[in-house]
Length: 77
Image (cartoon, rainbow, N blue to C red; front, side, top):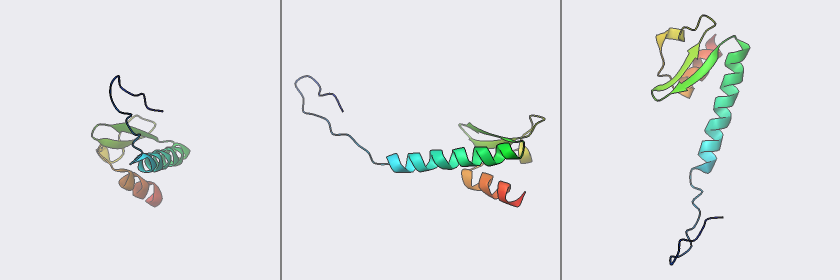
């Protein structure tokens, strides 16, 4: 429920994008599990995603991967 501001009209909730956010979160969790099964960690930063090995090195020396690129890398390995 959204609170009504004093003297104002009731604001309506905005659910646009909620399903997209949920889908992305579920996809990210799935990729984290797949990476973990291979001894890798999936990390996220402002520049993108990175796969990190047990020696704490970035796979392909990149920290700007998209989820699509992470999935492709895990598929071919």
